[in-house]
Image (cartoon, rainbow, N blue to C red; front, side, top):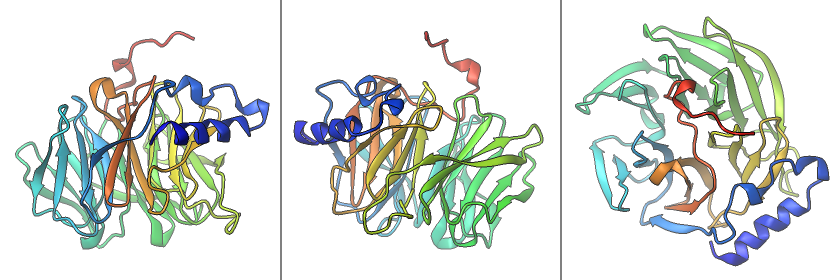
Length: 306
């Protein structure tokens, strides 16, 4: 994105009520921030995630057969071969890579040697998160479910029927809250994670901007969070950013507005680069914040001045 699109994003923020301006886009994006192309030539990029070193990983859920890696120099390579149909990826604190294999209807994990282990089968997984203590939560968009796989491998349904089409999923910085976007509604929902791993107190915490033609459906998709507690949600209207209280900070138009914006994460040096999967391309832009790595214990972050 060039300066023109940055201006559009800023204009979207300026149009918001004053009450939503506590954490404006100007606190997130340097003035010269613009979209930069990272990778292209794919059919439908998805599953963006980063490791502790800031390397980016993604899939081509429709046309690819591998998990791809973008290193610190920007070089793109095949990281895991023979891995088609992946819609969600997340690194765990144990150094393993967890994946939703939507095409094969299963949840799997790749070990440090890249060997595959099946965690669940005959499921309809879309996206997932893994807590620093090893609980895995994944969305089942067609069945309106959120499921959990505990560290012992037991799978349970922790929410059903609350979110119409649960899609993207993210953890709050302290990992006490699970956020889930709704591809079939206009809200992003939050749940409190109980000590036993169950979910409680669901609430339609964030209201997304919706297209004029579908005022009740924002098509909320992939999500990520930063160290200041903000939520980033991809949608039909672009990348929507919310402060920790659920108020909208602004909307960033997609770099390629004619193709789906489906996934986002922070990667690169210091995890300060916001990346998005937008059709067959991956884009990034510099920010003034950093991503919250869900697999790290909250104590791993330094105290942020108020």
